[in-house]
Length: 126
Image 1 (cartoon, helix red, strand yellow):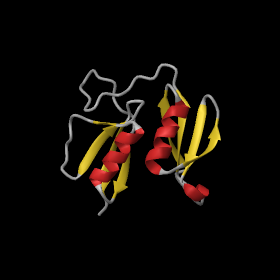
Image 2 (cartoon, rainbow, N blue to C red; image 1 turned 120 degrees about the vertical axis):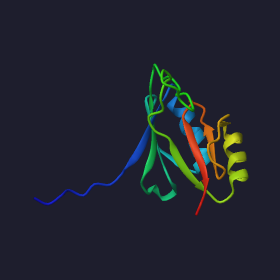
Image 3 (cartoon, rainbow, N blue to C red; image 1 turned 90 degrees about the horizontal axis):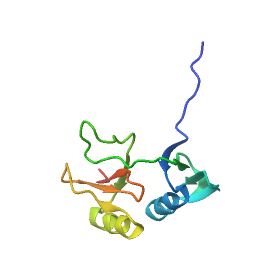
């Protein structure tokens, strides 16, 4: 039997307000909204290339704790975003609505918290 071809289409983040979180990531990444409803938003890089980033309404969303302890709400996924300038990218993230995490585990990576509480990392491109 021949193995099927698989490719990542996108990543989905839960949020109490998917439109607001989509707006944040559109400002941060320059993505464009290609599908928009009260419960579900899909964004993609310019030109519609994959993978995209989608957002679904989670009525009982609980933001993860960073860094998490044994009884804390754990993060299920985080995004790594390659940047050419950590300071400039951080300033953009802050203007868009992110908060710099108090705990920073690495010198060349900055952990930020998006408006729904999801941690994401900005790191210098290699």
